[in-house]
Image (cartoon, helix red, strand yellow):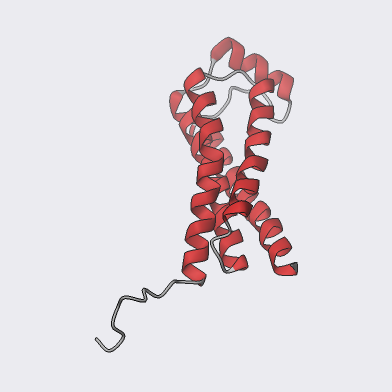
Length: 147
């Protein structure tokens, strides 16, 4: 039980780091004008409403969200030492709730909002499945071990 809790918590922590690293990268590639503080949601929202963001910036943020979810699942699967799909669903749902909250605060293009919401859970499930397969590979029983 302790291993599972650790797997989920560390998954969330590492996923958060990946997410923030990519969001920070986006702000370096597509800097905001002076006077716009991304930590001030009202200022940031007004900027997006008035000027929008570059498509590349939206794509990097989408990669940050899906990537954070994928990595959180991967770390969880590696630590849990199994393809723990229910944890992947839970992690993805957690990230999706945060994403939906952000979509209610900040205006975004419809393509981004739809893609964003749809990617969280599959990305986390993929991550936890890959992590579990790395640490607990299944031996194919039909393969002759003598060959």
